[in-house]
Image (cartoon, rainbow, N blue to C red; front, side, top):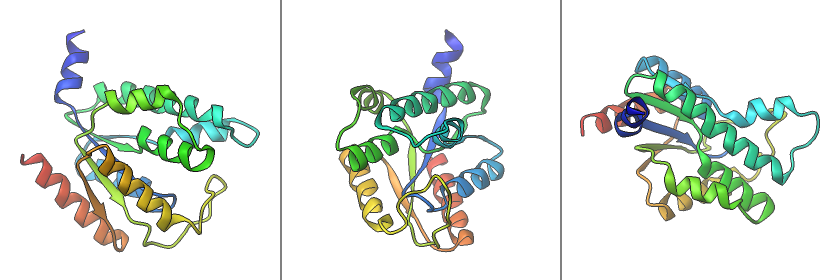
Length: 181
């Protein structure tokens, strides 16, 4: 139990968040490599690749549980820094946007889980087609939902924008600045 408590107490967790096709995964991998840290991939991709149908509202709770489990598995294997390619706030935003409600379990977990810093990716890079992406025309609207939700939950976040090179440089600087605190 001590190892679990140490993980919870000392692990610095940084979430990459934002609308579809805003560079989150690319940036999460680059940051993990730069800082020699682990990153938790977006469980939704793995889950959706495993079902042979369109997803439904009930699938979002399974995706949320899978995301939490993935983070719980990788976290203790990390040094003191973990990059998360999304968190449950994304499930909340997507649930509310698409289905007009969020499962109570997801809301409870959002309140219970702590992340040190959010890197909110602005959708100012070209849309990249992907069979799991749904909203090429609503990225700016979704970005505002992400920003407002992070503000609502009083999360520590910074916006990441520009070219892929600019994003990486800004993100590295923001992480280093946070680590100095």
